[in-house]
Length: 253
Image (cartoon, rainbow, N blue to C red):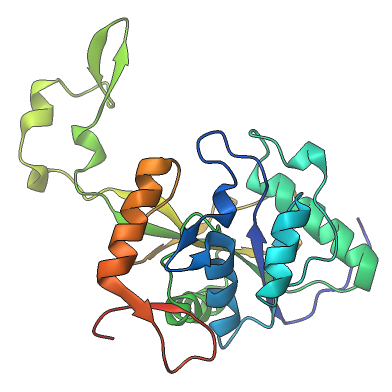
């Protein structure tokens, strides 16, 4: 796509396909009385910097849920980009091409919010956006949190043998105190920020990606994760009464 117009706006895109191998209708599962997709929409619409909130889905049922929470769903995602092996890049590329065909305008930044990380605060989204707008030499920003154990203390199994992740380490090295190794971080799904123009260069996060450290979050993959998230939300989160939206915040804030 050669001729496209990008404005200075910031939009969010929430990917919410219907299929899930481990939890039926995962994106419609509820935590504190709201669906996972509903929590993502509320966080986006509570942001002071995100001007429009879109949901990408292949499901009429999820579309109806998204519209109920005030998101925009201008089209249904293709079956091709709704499978188990569809990538984030596939989803975003389809979105920018189709939305441009509909309204001939695109945002400068896309904030990618996965529904499977429901405990997110809108003020942290805004903090990340403000940070990224200052980072002129970065292609993207991705949320991470610190792992309890450094990756140097992790192993994989090959030929029925325990093997260190790093070839220059022994198994005994994995028993050394974690303070001897550099801290490790993992992508947590809280948010990604991408420059829309890079999508047309066949990039999603690219190579210059800024790590934005967020509070620990729960990425819901299976039933145990969902049950654990419900427990954590019940005991450590509450709805922000100052917000018009039902946006979750940690107790004591």
